[in-house]
Amino acid sequence: MPRAPIIRKSPADLRVPPNPPIGWQEARRALAGLPGGGVNIAYEAADRHAQGPRAGHVALRWLGAAGERREITYAELAALSSRWAQLFAARGVGKGDAVFVLCGRIPDLYGAVLGALKCGAAVSPLFSAFGPEPIATRVNLGRGKALVATASLYERKIAKVRGEMPTLAHVLLADSPEVRAELARLPATFEIVRTGPEDPSFIHFTSGTTGMPKGAVHVHGAVVAHYASAAVALDLHPEDVFWCTADPGWVTGTAYGIVAPLVHGVTSIVDEADFDAARWYRILQDEGVTVWYTAPTAVRMLMKAGADLARQYARPKLRFVASVGEPLNPEAVWWGLETLGLPIHDNWWQTETGAIMIANTAAMDIKPGSMGKPLPGVEAAIVRRTGGSVTLVERAGEEGELALRAGWPSMFRGYLGQEERYRKCFADGWYLTGDLARRDTDGYFWFVGRADDVIKSAGHLIGPFEVESALMEHPAVAEAGVIGKPDPVVGEVVKAFVSLKTGYAPDETLKKELLAHARKRLGAAVAPKEIEFAPALPRTRSGKIMRRLLKARELGLPEGDTSTLESPA
Ligand code: ATP
Ligand code: MG
Image (cartoon, rainbow, N blue to C red; front, side, top):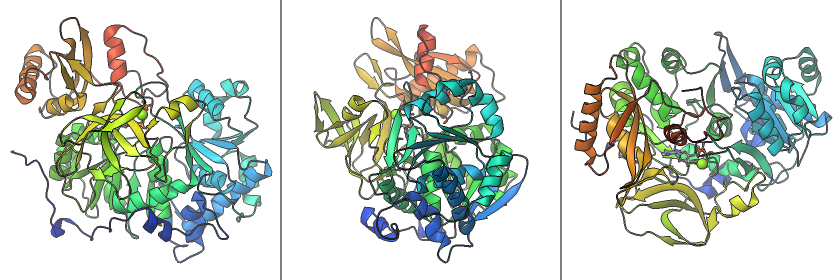
């Protein structure tokens, strides 16, 4: 069907009036601050509610992989995290220390993370599918003093490398009889260590899409941005049942899977199991999810699973869907509208930004393919680097590097062990994101590609996203990853790797058809010259297509760091 470039919303499309566009000041006023001064994320997330009218409200609704279901109220979460804080404090863990948590998505992950914050330590949840070496690398980079793990993850992942982590003084097995008994014995209250807005809170590792993952250090003051962005970009209202599908091993799963819903006092769904299309539709239906925050990779997998499956489930409560992590192809936004009955709201941010910066909000009309507009308080610009300074690109439609005016509350405060690299991210008061984008005359931002992924062909700069989105419009295409392949004549030629939906055969006829389709949509200068079918594309565990790996494999070059590679693809 012909598709309009904009999805306009009427009041009838919105089940509840969207939140007002609050900025940092309003968010600061909405938060409590530690009694006696200072700010601590765990206080805002748990204790504040436990001491007020939301004490009995369900904070976490945990869905176990084997079908268990457990609800944890704010009062219970405050108590659980206080017990963990007591346990850490008894071992001398406090300000200046780092705690790592490797537990899978179980309730104690949330207790331990908030408990570590209560102690004043910085905390880093690790993705449980990491192998031993990536775990040891991260713990060593962060100089971890304590590590919380389950017994089985310890056996499989840590036992072998335990001797390689010299700073690690304590390993606590969350499900061991000793730790269970100690937790039960310890007081369910804890006097939170006084932290200020500049004290470290989280250490998050980047996805490793473009190279070796970096450890970004965040602070307690970031909670202001978590609160504001969840109000505006996710439209959280007090009675919402919210589901962020990201694992807390990635910044999205911590900022919006732990912190943001809890500081808003809503009920958050935690699913222990991995992606499964039918299971996910069932959760949306049975748990009455109202606001859903997911990722393009998940949307593409649901698209691949087909509309028939989607039709077998109802989503009567669902009212707002958002996505982050990769460009959201226009096709996916439309799929949302046609299959879920709701458009998908793309938003943009990075591990380094700590919170959503640019978004399609509930109050906005959506331009499919655009990541939206900067949130209140966020100043975004398109710039060009010239030596050590930047010049602003004022003209709408012109491409350049996406930059943010430095100083927003959730800005990262350093890369672990890489001071010089951190310094180089800033120039003339701007933070340079490494992403290329453009802004249109209405102020919407459009993602072009990562600076590292942009293809230079015969004098054109080609963003892989545009080519991938065009290919995705073809009914046979499930996923596409586009790279530049060195060419002596034009510099680079565009090559696309394509995985197909079930029912389509990867043959020459289809290849020709896809090449022709792309040429018609993009013109000969931008369309791929080569297409290769692949059963699946290599992805990070956070779901991003690893174009650098497609390129390295194509050129027979070393693959570089693959610690975050999902599975050999
Ligand atoms: P690394 O920095 O290690 O290469 P990474 O950049 O993928 O990994 P993250 O911080 O998890 O690590 O991801 C942030 C990046 O993801 C952004 O810089 C951008 O390239 C991409 N991204 C996130 N959201 C969007 C979006 N809505 N549209 C386009 N790209 C997005
Ligand atoms: Mg990055």
